[in-house]
Structures are given as structure tokens and as C-alpha cells.
Figure 1 (cartoon, rainbow, N blue to C red):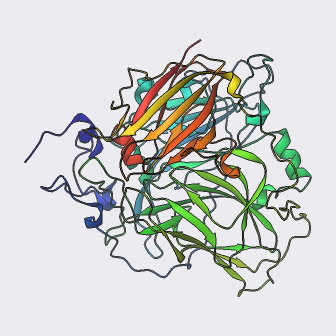
Figure 2 (figure 1 turned 60 degrees about the vertical axis):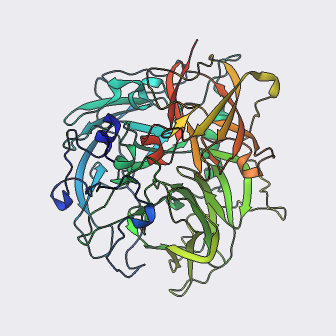
Figure 3 (figure 1 turned 30 degrees about the vertical axis):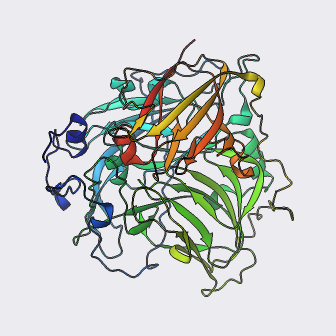
Length: 548
């Protein structure tokens, strides 16, 4: 039985302003025909026919974005703090480009910030605002940039069509103003630096087509540093910047010409999975390291695939951060599971390896997943994503980091103190049910940017109950503007590495999370949503408005 396509689906499949076509190397992305069936299963989707030898290309490390000359911003709502320094100005061009993702195939079309995938890495400092002008040079495609994990005004948050003025059409430029501050305590009017972020990322967030934009390459890292973290680096507790590597892992499908294939499930209960694993935009690369400690900012940047990462030699990783924030102390992890958009800041110690081309260890994904519902079980050794080769001589001019874990697994040096939100601060409890009532919904409503689902008051704290009523589907829930502190997962106290601050929390099948969240600094409209990008594009998102 046929049915009329909705506006959301027309945008999704590019029929308005983009065309339902297989463009391949000629310009944008490849859309396969929807076909007659509207219930095609993920298992039936096309797979990559190309075979290649892994670990034959070096891991790309995105360059650091450099500030440029100042300009008069179109609009700029910087936070009201006296400590702000002179802003730095940046210009970023969004444009199609050809790039080698699979070894030996250099003509894959991607969309890139500054014409590269991943985009350049921003490294910014506390109280030093960044004013970024994004210019969209992608034909026929609207974009919005979201600084994921950012504490910013609503006008610069990139909350989809909550603010239509944020939409950047082809040939247009929009300015986004990031204050790079910590949230402001309403009682003292000082910044709460215990909540200052370290690891954010920026990506496309255009309503209905976020999945397509991110899949085509519109993502990059946004890394922050304040006086506390600078001191940890200067005192060699944490590795120096040269040994601090952002690392995004994503999965993709390619056709026989190495062009990206993107066709989410034709019903509205999808999640697009790839079968080629990219690390910083390169299929299964290698990375030369010295025999010392390295810091890796690990990011699950996939549309629908979850991961559980281990080291092939059984060595643990020291987790020092969750999502955007440093933990109070490091926690030894034998494996780390990532929902969509989740980050883990980790230390990997290569100091015990002899310097030799034969000193090799792999970063493996042991999590199995066959469709967009979410992960299944684990299987070891899993799929090797990245090959570390410990063959570089130790640079003795830069001392190795001293951070270690004690026998209990918790590191003894305080990294970033945590201030817990007290139950006595909670002024209201709200419950949000993530379900599948005639499509993806929150509280049985599809996304409507004009109707906020909640209106918390600024300078108050609330308890949000996040409930998964989506059967065996899994949903990672991301809240814009503020961190949330997880109190309970399925009625139980969360593990220590999830007990502090998060911006994305996993909801397993019929899962339930109780979180505390405090609203500070800014008023205005924001969103929260499932970060399975196909679920987000099919309306599992809601607006909320922080009111004075």
C-alpha cells in the first residue's frame, strides 16, 4: 500500500532542493531508491563491495584551527562575565571535497568543515570567546552547527529550527559566539569551574537531515582548557598537547566506486550502520607512538553504531573524563562502552613496550550489532580499528605524564573537583518517555520546535526521569546547554565513571535513568533528543525553554 511522503521525509531523502539521485563523485552524496517496500530491514541494506588491506595508512590527526582577523559579528550574545578576554575570530568554509577514506581510493566525496573530514580541531581557552563564521558552500543543502557539550546562549547553540535564523543556506554565512566559560553560580555570580568542559565536538544539526550531514563528514573536535587543566599539563600530571590526540570512530558504507552510500531504513524505525570502520576519517589506520603515556579523546561519532573498546593485549585504559568533563580522578577500565555521541577521555600507557616495529597493540571493538536497534553481545577479540606501533624514540625533552591509578583503580591525584547537585536543590520532577507511537516520540509527541515540552526556571535544579518505552530499541539521550548528573540507572547507583557529569546518557531496552540538572547563565530555547541520528531526524526530539 502506498502512502504520501511527509515534509520530513521529503527533506530526509533530498527530494526538495537536492533531488532524489545517485550523484556519486559528481557532487554530493549517494541516495539509493526507496523501492516499493516501506518495511525493508536493516539486514537487507547494501554492503561495501570493496576489499582492502587494513593498517596500510597512517592515522590522520586533524590540524588545529587558527584564529584570523576580526570582523563585525552578525549577532553575538556573549555571557555577562567580567573575566572575558578579547575574542578570537575564526572563519570556516563548509564545502564538498574528495578525500581518501579507503586505502587506494582517493575520490570519495565528503562534506568538510574547511574542506576536510573530520573538520579542524578547535583548541580554545577559558574566558577567551571564539566567534566563528560558518559559510555554507554545499549546493542544495541547509546546515546548522551545534557545539555539542557547549555552554552557550540559545542563539549560538544550533538547536535546529528552534531558531530558524540559525539555518545556514547555500551561499550563506552565520556567526556563532562561544563564550568558553563555566556555568555561573546564581548566588555568587562566579563561574563554577568544577563544571568547566574539556572535550566538546561540533557537528551538523539541521532538523530532519542531521544524519545525512554528519554521515557526509560534518563533524570536528572542540577542545577547551582552563587554568586547572593547564596546571595539570604544566606539572606533567597529564600529557602535553603534542601527546593529546582527538580520535573519532565512525562506520560507513561505500559503493563499488568508493562513494558513500546513505539510505536509512525506509520505515521510520531505523539507524544506519556501516561495515567499514573509520578512525579520524581513515579506514583502519596505524599510529606510531613513543614509549610514554598518551591522552586520547575518544568519540563515538557514528549515526547508529555503539562500540565497546578494548586493547588487544588486555591492558587497561585509565579513563580521566566522561563526555565533556574531566572526572575527579582516573578510573581503570578494561573496556569502555560508548553510546552514540558519548566521549571518554583516556590515558593509554605505552611506556612498558620496547621501541621496535614489532611492538604492536590494537584498539579493538568487541561489541556486536546487526541493526539500528542497538548492540547485542560482545565477542573477543573483536574488530581491530586502530594499530598502535611503539617504534618512535622517546623524546626526553618532554617529561612523561605521571598520572597513574592506585590498586583500587582510582587515581589519587584530584583532576577536576565535582560538586554534586543536592536533592534539596530540586524544585520539580519531570518525566520524559521515549517511545514509538506512530513514529519516534517523546511523551507521545513528535518534535515541534514551536511547542516547548518543559519550561524550567533559570537558577533552579530539576530531576528529569528519562524512560525508554521503545521495546528493544536503545536510545542515547543528549541534553543541550547543561551537564546532567546521573542518580540512578534502572533503579541502581551508576558506576563511578558515570556518577559525575554527562551530556549523553544511554537508555537500554525499557531502561530508566534519573538525572539531576541545573539551569544557569542563559535563558532561551534548547532541545534534548535521542542521538541515534536517524531517530533524531524522525522526530525523537523536544524543545525546552529556560525562563527567567
